[in-house]
Image (tube, rainbow, N blue to C red; front, side):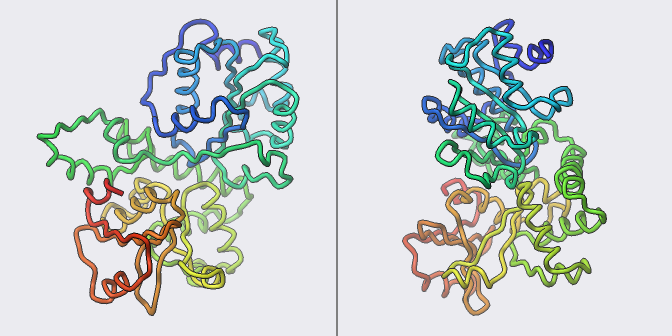
Length: 386
């Protein structure tokens, strides 16, 4: 156990410098919440960079905030060696190793926290009884749901998204001078093709994305939910990627796959729980939102392009716009067969047209829809201005 702990925490035996690229927007969010006692949960797609953000923040605590290295404990809870130990027992072993009493503050970083059953209750007990600041990660939205409300008022959730365009350029080590801004459009099209999964952006290894899709589908959906027919799950995912940006009829999907509508609805929830997809409701009153089909978007356009090929740039661009404004809780506007892509929570109307224009019916609906602000996003310049 001691060897495992030291291997997981190299800063205990020397200085620590994070060697990867920093995700400043998420580190800033973590820094804002450093002084309070709230448990910080990082969630998002598998391999989207949660572990790297945790370790980058550890380097910040050591080098910028002068936190004692042995008061920082990182551990991945899905390690086989820890299978029979509870989080509380692991924490006790760590405190014993460094002779740190429970009244002394430690920074606890728990990767894949949902690997442990009853972790909500365990974290509540640690929060209440010990001097700790807890950071935890999970790749499943459903597992983070606190059914018994153990952590109500004690937690904050930060969803880690794929790289945005600025981060993409940073990971590629591309710096564009003012005099060379004409190059941005070409790099933006590359971004539309590649997407924002950090490891793929760094390596360009297409097999990495395919293996990632296979791992999520099998480990997090098929095996986890004990689904017998693997092909249905894989075919369902392909259909969702083909229909990215479109209204999705579960009845039609169920008919195509020859499964029940309830099964189709359940599978959809599984895809959402793993962040492979997001869904968007129709704008309007509650009964309109509930009775109308949802639109579906890919969690990362690079993953979508692996499945569908990089051919419908308009759909890919719309997907990127959605990911950029997702935190504004957008819905879609649909009246008499005509659609406007998004209405945000603050009533900003957004229509996405990649290098094209609204048709007559769309323009009429766009002009007549009540909104606080209206935007047409038709290329990389208006995208970056969002």
